[in-house]
Image 1 (cartoon, rainbow, N blue to C red):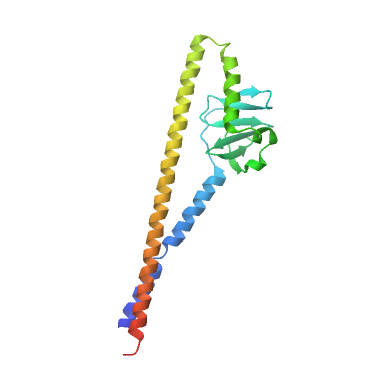
Image 2: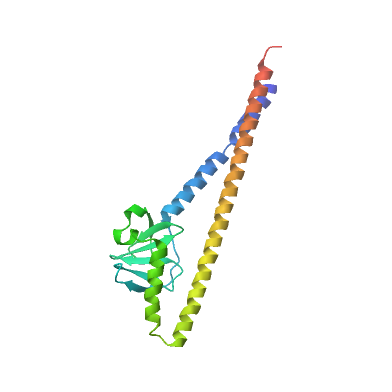
Length: 190
């Protein structure tokens, strides 16, 4: 009877050790999310051409989008994505695989070039158009900030869930060792 109980407890302990599989699946989903990414872009972005750099950059967009050689490139949190359409699908690109005209510029510099060129265009606009553009720019900056804060919260949740799964896994392994030790103790001749 004791052996049957211990055998059942051992099987139950092994069944409870599935969080390892769940943690691995969650990690694969996170990697998949990094490799294939979707961005919400409702309409074709407006671009300002940067003749000195040889590409165009989106303006009034919540994303940093570069248009070059019939492709679109988005930089999101230091990762570059490429698509042949602004609607996607977006595929992760290593920085070394970017066109040389893009990768030789830091993202901050690309933004600076874009803003300078856009400012030249804005000087030809009416004051009302300029105010509207400034309001749009503030709105987009707020959206970027909100999205960044959301990504930070999502990452913290992801890390917390993985920490809990790891703690559960360690607890299950500890329980399994205790069960095995008790089994060995019960099987010793007395």
